[in-house]
Image 1 (spheres, helix red, strand yellow):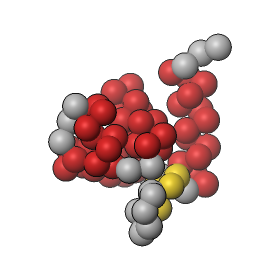
Image 2: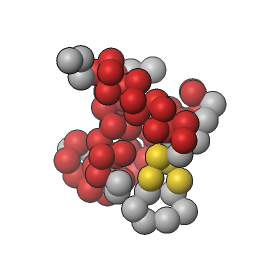
Image 3: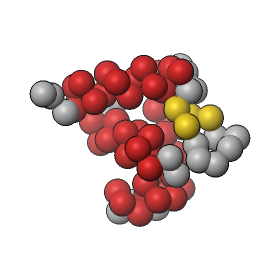
Length: 75
């Protein structure tokens, strides 16, 4: 697991939109989607509910978001 991918996850969660997050991260949308899917596979949980717009974190995604914010953005 790379910090870069966790930052991708956090930006996507913040923006609630993969395309907009990709633009802000200066990566392509397919690259961001692929990275998020690989992170889900690595963690063994679904991070986002992609069936609606905006995409929102699942309960597991919300928990990981809290931990990522704690780790990446220390107080």
